[in-house]
Image (cartoon, rainbow, N blue to C red; front, side, top):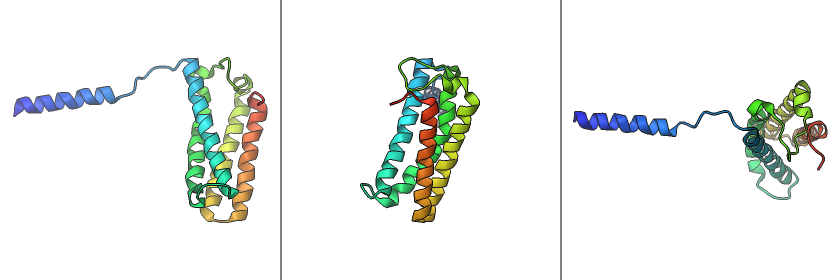
Length: 153
């Protein structure tokens, strides 16, 4: 019995240790790849929400899923750019202005986060006029940040 208990505790401890993620400072390239995934996720959810809001595709009942994801991802947008010391990387669309104008970039990210939260609240309210206005504001926040901090498409 005692041997079984020791084996069980050892197995649990070993499993818990292996389940922990490696804690290491990401390389600038890995940090860039991560923030690209975050930005693609934002784009994907906003695009899906836009298609649904325009009646082109998707179930309107699912708009809240996409707006909630925008709110969650908006909270990660700023930290994603600070990872690996906030180092710019070649061959990305992120302009050096992100790091040179850190306060301006943070303000732009905050503006987007506020717009995404307002869009989520508007969708929850069911007020189509409020949804349309909040959708425009969220798109404008995206565009405003891209104009100053992203390489032209």
